[in-house]
Length: 178
Image 1 (spheres, rainbow, N blue to C red):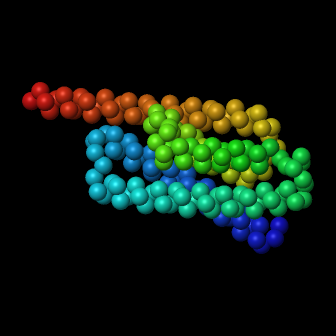
Image 2: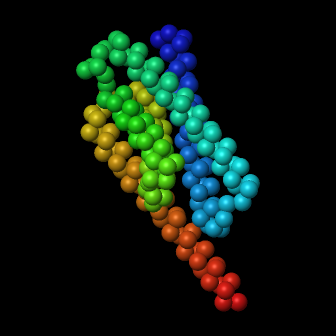
Image 3: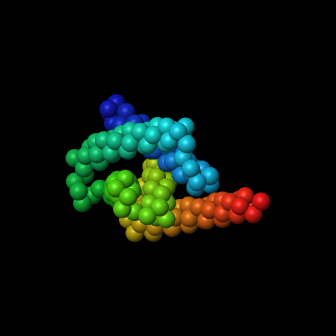
């Protein structure tokens, strides 16, 4: 493997880690906003920083992935690309489309954040599988695992949101009763 390709693997791995961590912070900030019902100036500034870091990670992932896939494609051809590369491409496609739809407010908050979280954690899982040398899976196996991540993430996000909203309404009710 050439130095350039090694550098691209490193960039891709760092970017996936950065994106997964930033996505986690974005959801935690989302929960904090739901918990108190307001977004103060400090929270707004922090969210702006988190979203910038997410964008940087997404660009770095896209560029490094395109270069790595192009290198493998030039050696094997399209029909011999492992399902791993299609899994990465599919996950990135969903990640980008969902991010655009969320930005345009076309995806409800009951689905968008969970899809993003599930997609980021899927990319992290794929990176770990690549490091472990386990990339010889079938696309169907990946797809079922991806759907499981999405369902789990949507369930967790909506469960936490329901708990936070319930606690907030209980606190608000207590304040008005006193």
